[in-house]
Length: 466
Ligand code: PLP
Image (cartoon, rainbow, N blue to C red; front, side, top):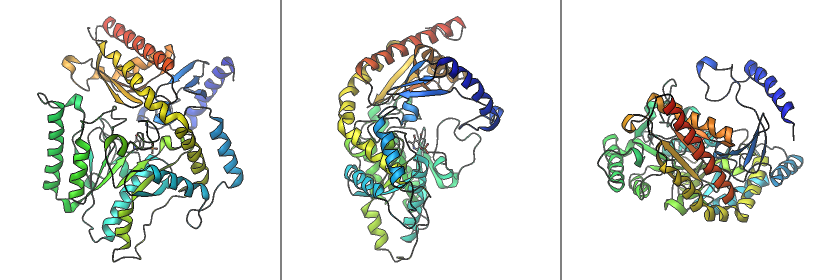
């Protein structure tokens, strides 16, 4: 363990060097290329250690990815062994055994006839691959006009051009260009922000009607795919109304619209299963995208699972010579696939069972926070939860004050030993899946104190009253 004084000195130095040479993701113009973010020195289990040597619960599991926790020797060892056996071989001309074994294991877990996997380097490239496959599929089938993509409010699907064009959270598109002419946006399925006077059941009907009307208005012959996270993750842990996704799936099937389920966050244990589509949501999508938890964040890897039916359609088309001109240097990376195989062993050897067992406790402890006057709603499923605060007058969304709430809570919680992922007025909790009941108690207690201190601050500053 690095001593805290040494760490503090190291951070000071790194801060200066980062400002000189590093560009951090999602920066603002004013400080782009001139910003250093807090230094994290070490990780161990569900904890990370900051520059001052302070141990924090890793509330967001990195970016919803360190599913089996930090410092797992098994993953370090397999990475080393694979690098020594074969560090790389070109997927253009060759096949490595870890990629075959991993594709086989993933196919066994995927629903329906999703039996083939195309590996990528992460979630954005997985979504990008699924969308380019849809375009290719419809070109080969002689439907070149069937390319529009349906996405929804509060969605996040990535940072490459096409995947980012689907994003629809506040501020995602304020300053960025996108392939807007290829995308049709539908409403957010957030029950908490549903139209006044509607029950959640009625809200599901509203969403389904909107979908059906959009298909009729735009024309099914122009729509290639619908892309959806089963639970919108960085949009604020939005659990959609029950039954709505399977109804949309049926409309897609009836209209030859490919249903792409973006499981970048929900797969690999977050909801207690390798994939949540079938087990939790009763869905059999045409494609599933995954990333993050597939390697528990130890190595960049993602992929798309594709239905046999689609590949069969290609084989039966009039264009056997048509080439899917798409592939990445690091597609099927042997080290990434080897890490994922070991990660899957660990998930299957108790972690998935643990998640299913501990989830009700995790959700209940966080829901207890709903009694705090600043908290508007606590929601979630599996090992993901969102605590939405409402500070604006009459619960108005997105006010200037809301913007500060998540950061204020995070500040207090970090002092108390918990890293929160603030998203505007929300705190997102998605800890490593290995978290114990006692650690869940710690997390909930710190959150309660952090939110209470935030309420005190807001009152003292005259910004809010309980
Ligand atoms: N899809 C979803 C649902 C995500 O949450 C993310 C990232 O947060 C992505 C795609 C993009 O993944 P990546 O950042 O690995 O490119």
